[in-house]
Length: 151
Image 1 (cartoon, rainbow, N blue to C red):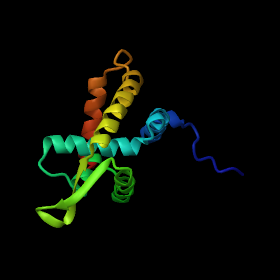
Image 2: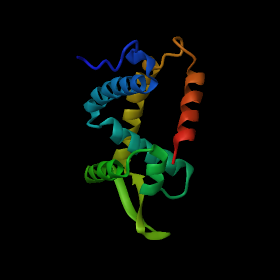
Image 3: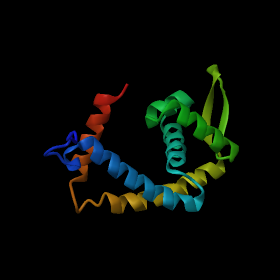
């Protein structure tokens, strides 16, 4: 006899599953578009995170970047290594903590980030079309969930 686990249930009743699906759909669109400029979406997030933090704080290091992006420590480390190898990110010893390294974008990294930002914005303008739903309410809800579930 079959064990019926999902009797009278539907995937569309599960917010986490729906969030997983929409995140994957958006990330696939973004990765396909960013492939043209030889970036992945996580690479873009790290490049833009470094630029954002450098614009708004004094020194950026890997710990601050991890906290800002909410990405896994090992993923950030791996992506940073590949971006540094490509000459897009510059790591230097932090003058305040010689165990840490500061992060900044090279001129080429800044150029790549700006190109990627235009691509991502174009996709998001269509994906999150404000004529389809209340984007301000959507963003407020997401921000609240992030705050409630952050470390």
